[in-house]
Amino acid sequence: YMTFGKDPRLIPDGKAVIEKFRAGKFEPEGYTLYSYASVQAIAAAFKATGGKDSAKASEWLKANSVDTVMGKKAWDSKGDLKVSDYVVYQWDEKGKYQEVQERDEVTINVGGVDRRSVINIRLRGSRSL
Image (cartoon, rainbow, N blue to C red; front, top):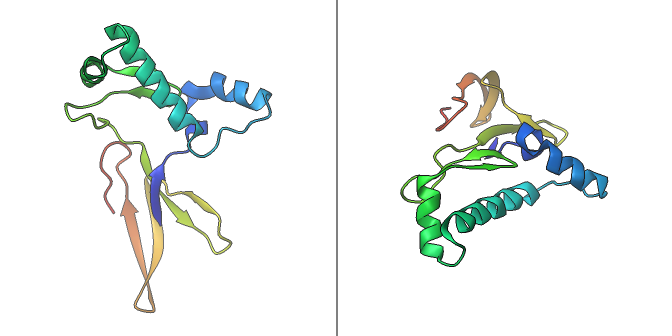
């Protein structure tokens, strides 16, 4: 198992930008859309605050949300995202992974013994296993 952000290419808000990347023969995988969303947030903050003072832009981001290719993003007073998009993935025996759904039954090998367990995942915010 691993936790990582949901594949941003599956988020509807980025569809138009993803299509432009693909039209240019570029697949926006990895951190491409994360970077694009970050630039969108920074650009919105500097536009709203006059474009020169990074401290003002930082404070603006903590008080405002921004529409990005990865959906609406909002930050708390520390600058952390208010909602994390992390999900849980599971690898299969062929080395492929897929997102574990909200409630899946899994087998975990503990000390050489397979244990069946049910994991519950809250879809927004913190996760529970």
